[in-house]
Amino acid sequence: KDPRQVGVAELGEETRSKMCEVREETGPGTMEARLATLEAIVRQQQGEIQHLRNRVGMLEAEAGHVPASNKRAKLAPPPADAFSPLGDEAVSYCASYLGACDLVQLGRTCRRFGAGRDGGRPSLVDGAARQIFHETATADEKECLARYEGGETHVKLLKELEGLRKPLELDILFRGISHFGSTATIQFIHCNDGYVYDKGSAISSHIMRSGRHYANFKATQMASDEINIGIIRPLLKKNDRMDSEFHPVCWDDFRTRYDSDVDFTIRASHWGDGNVNCCTYYGVDGSCWWSSGEGTCNEGDREWSGNGAMGFDPCTIGLLLDLNAGTLTVYKNSRRLGVMKRGLTGEYCWMVTLLTECIISVERDVPPE
Image 1 (cartoon, rainbow, N blue to C red):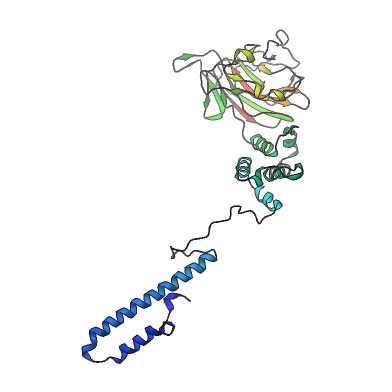
Image 2: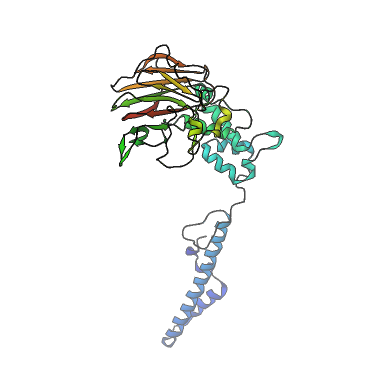
């Protein structure tokens, strides 16, 4: 019962007897004594009511509910493993609502979630990632993300799927290049902040490992058509300096020439047997340039069936990298020009190298019919 509704009948025997004594005393000389007695009764009642309140608070705390008006009652601490009553299947189902980064954090909370299980079974978080990937990825996305043999986790594969669904970015910038409005658009200016640049490069960090990938490169505000658009092996920029130079289309030994600023070894095991480590479409005459980065290139053999120049008017160059067929096909303003390069294997990233002032934006798309 609410302590605030406690009646006289529920008070202690001593309290009731004192109240009777007060009622029996009716003489005028007893007024001060009656007042003192009543004050004592009130104090005793307050004590008994507070005792009842404390008891109610303890009972509610044991039941897992703390009323807003009761500041003293405290909840018992939760168990060390709040998911311990749940089976592995239930935990995996709950984890299937998380993204790749959240699954990584969940796997770090305790061994039960992050470590492999008996019989060579994957961890709970990796099992959840596998379920998410196979239930949500389309057939084309699965083709673009063929799983590597030898220990690639499904959490890593899920992270790659999330990256495949994001807009493309030219987020690895070198000297002379800066973003213009967004990370999907770059600009090159010969004179910037008192410095003079003759060329500049930008690369996307998104790695294409298998399947078909198509991107549109829209060129505007062109001073000329000295523009190189193509693919390059995944790389790691060793520093955040914006004055680092990197011009792979200008040097056929770019892997050793820029070794102090760029690391190509991080994904070299996924390059396959081919030696085409950089391949671009040159806007001036539409020719193809490729190199191994170690001294081998196609100097003097750049023509391909259908090659055509960009011209000086703003245009859109589309590239289709088909890693199933090992080809790179060029489109201009949604019109197919032809297959520029064959024999491509392994992983690549999109890249742009500019020798003229212009603005380039990149966008993931589907190939024109």
